[in-house]
Image (cartoon, rainbow, N blue to C red; front, side):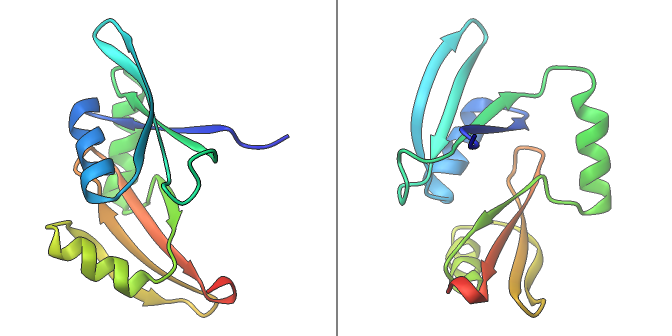
Length: 131
């Protein structure tokens, strides 16, 4: 068994697609129109056949209270692995990305937390033993 697709709720699929592709650098894998929304998945260009990230509409009434609680408490929805957090922090800051936590060294891992502009906090993480 392996993870095939993981999802996150976004407030606007078009805006999320632009942010995740043009700013973060993911690639669109699937876009299947489903009425008002779409089944929209992204992959890392480093692993185009790997785990897909599904950008899910946040229209269900349970989503907003849950996601707002995470945002208020500063809890990231998910974490993306990067080779070098400082390099990514600088690259993304230059593109206008707002970070709530700059790079912090936690011993075996360095992390930073950004706002994805679509209602979520995202952690980027560098695992030192994998660098």
